[in-house]
Image 1 (tube, rainbow, N blue to C red):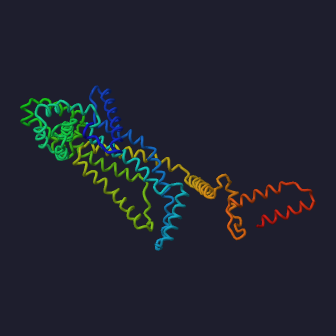
Image 2: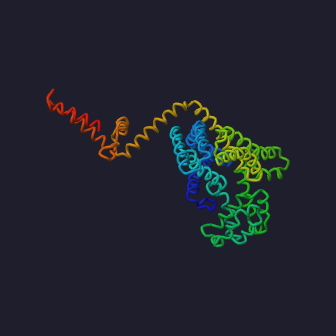
Image 3: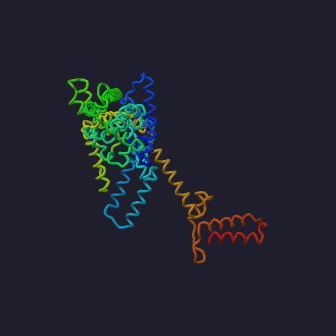
Length: 438
């Protein structure tokens, strides 16, 4: 297992599956381009596939948001009704009335959270795969093999670690150099650590590697040069090396207009596409709910939706351009999805959906009540009749089951045939009357 693979239970396993997909995409691109796949294109395709697979979850989440916006006025009325009543009974009554509103609209208070809980591990795992391409894409990992073999077997693990310490990407992985498995290179631990560092290395870092005296003395300059060139070919996206940060590319553009434009365009597009995506999402109501916590959370979300695009732009200047490309691709795909979902949801008859949900809630409540009384096989109409009957008899309460049994006996007695006008017939009529009265 490559070191950069996540070993967490959920994200690690999801990332492993996504890694197989990314590796397949890379192989496909290699076949159609004659052995010249591009990491930037692979990231865009991968992002598109994942968001399409999550389309059903996105639809359910947006439908929930639409229903939530329609039921919010009723929730606000309930919250206002109990605003100044903090006793336990009032809180229980408020919760009960709130549950009835949720049942009426056929949604769960945690409905939106469930969709997010499912989506978040997938998105985190996707980020992990993109951030650690060599760990999941065999063809990219193999590019490092010649150089890593020279570092471990010719120069030695300890001295090669000294070379890594001179690179700007070393600090991210400094703890791995202190691991007990590093010195002995158990399971190629040291080799994978070197790949981690070199994969994050800037063009300036690679120049330091190629000019290092140990690299020169051991005849590894050409190997390092070849490794760097192959990585550049994989990372070149419209003239920009997506392994470098836009800030680094601007400082080392060499006057190239294409590099300057792309280095500025990626952070700007990352912010713009995210802002558009936030605007297309269902917006929370501006009216106060009466719940200070809910109102504070709503205001915080609105503030975050405004500031996050700006934060993304700043971060994109300092992080590898590949991550900025991933953010742009994700925001564009989500925006297209949002437009499609919004159009479809706007065509739905929510009044009819609410009416159907109310019927379902009513039927569910009736079924639960019958189950509690041990009358699963009794119809709603009959159960209502039994429950409305008098339950007092000889100083004790009758259950709905006893009422049903008594009714059955009355019907059986009524089926007995007596001679019309006979004394037995008249006695039976009096008995039925008395039984019903009781």
